[in-house]
Length: 150
Image 1 (tube, rainbow, N blue to C red):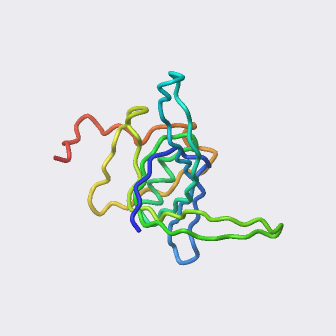
Image 2: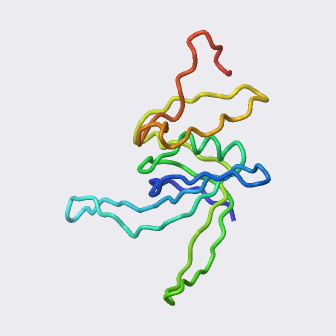
């Protein structure tokens, strides 16, 4: 099933590079309906749904550099519902999404897009000590002399 969701990043992204060299970044996103209550003239929050988002390859490297906890994002990808049970006997279901695309929700802010030249691999992720501040840039501004991609 293909799913597109808009929500808030609820956890710091976790990046791993496997022994085989594969790049994987995983984070959680909360999606919450909001509606206007005409009678009370206030906004009401609906139930929260949590997604576990996994990115691979270049998308994983770009997500690691760009996504931060509390960012508003859009995600589209292949979704699967997975049942779970923990050692305390609690159980439930979770929605896992293998992302095909991730981007900022421009309703809540602005972003600067930096396109990587064809054939250029995504940069290795910055270690956490040098990572951008929470809610940091979605990419560095393109140099002034760079031609637009269109």
